[in-house]
Length: 244
Image (cartoon, rainbow, N blue to C red):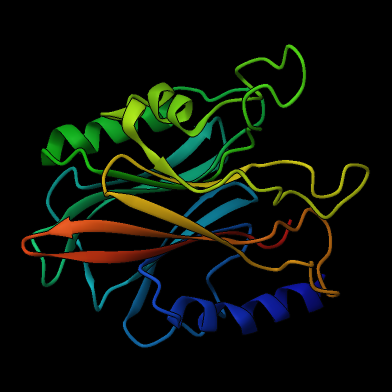
């Protein structure tokens, strides 16, 4: 609804400005969002589906070298993704950040291949995935197939990400979705990293605001501790699926 979109556009800058490094927002065009000072975004659209990777450009530089970024669709004309190498402005830290809206029941090969091309081009395999994965926790119900129920490590392995068995990930929380008949019954929204030493999870929009409609998801924030030189960087990453 128009009200839902306007409320989201109004609320998003405050959430980004609250110490966040990266945010992936699904099904909300960046047009009209008054970004906090120093913030930029990369949009990927596949027909009506859109995902926007927001980043704090005061902290992170978008790498411009050949092969450092890709955008595309996980399946034909649907389910967009962004894959981009970022360099920290003050620390010796480089990351491949992925924002995506996964399809249902199939992963496809496009996103995994895009990640591998960026990794191979840049030599950086530290990977941060921020996504609506449309996958439930393992064994969410008896005999649930791997295409519907997977651990965060399973997802990274399927994408061909290095050190997939050692990933850190947000807690599997019931963030999807507002619309009936199931309500908030699914643990689709995740932040996953194959680097760092610890990650914590914060749930937003709980309970769901009264203006929310359709397939609204509750937002999640990950706080990731990353050792650098003689100290550590605390990264704050947000996954939001705000309207549908």
